[in-house]
Image (cartoon, helix red, strand yellow):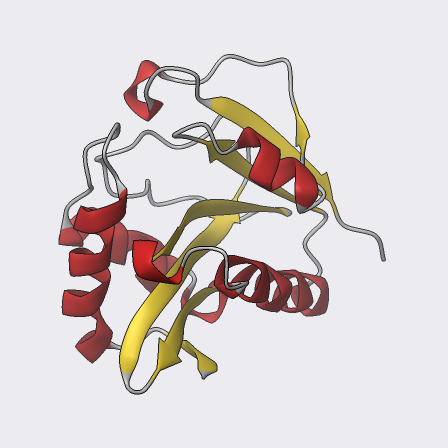
Length: 160
């Protein structure tokens, strides 16, 4: 079991995993997902077990509290003090084994080392309670309807 940075050869596994976990939100294309990774590869990880991707996390630098739209590659200027956690997915068969928490812990460590001030995310598919347990708080701000019904913008402030 290990957490590693995403490399080109892991994308087919990531796409397969994504297809299996996103039921109420349409999965994004390879081009869109890779735009996050190419912008910020040091904040994108996979959790491997026996050479198989069991989970992944995509995060990228961001400069506004308005989340990027789904299904579109990132705009050219996204550098800022915010780290946007775009996606965290774990194989359904591995749910409840702590893989998501381990990926988040790796992201928090990396975010701290890189000097980010906060992490933003949009909780989808009724995941607000999971994110609250990870230290994120809901914000009173609407998100674009592309995130699906009940989507919630959330923040975790990072301490120095």
